[in-house]
Amino acid sequence: MKVFYASAESLDTPGIWRAAFVVATDAEEAVRLLKTDQGFADYAMPPAELMECGEGRETIRQTVGNRPIIGVPSEKGVYPIEQPELFGR
Image 1 (tube, rainbow, N blue to C red):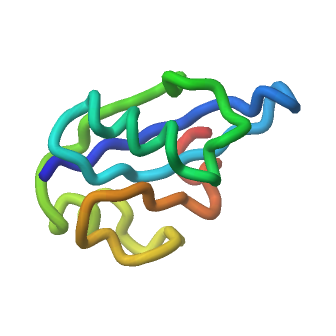
Image 2: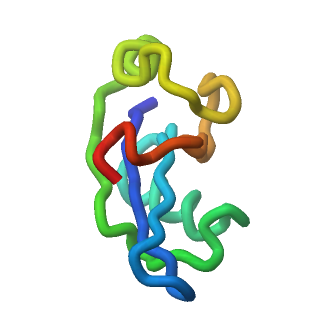
């Protein structure tokens, strides 16, 4: 499993961004997961930023540290970041 950082801009309100970590086998699957995630329904796809962070659960722990995310990234899926401004968006 690979871990990706993704950020996308709102289609309804330009300047509003949403960010998440996506756990997937590759970048194509990460985009598919984002496209089907309700939290990203009104955001531009493909995302403005999709960056591979590494592989495995430990990567998320190292990348996120104590910053707030929603859920425990342990399997494929989209894990929204509550405060994307902490990551630059």
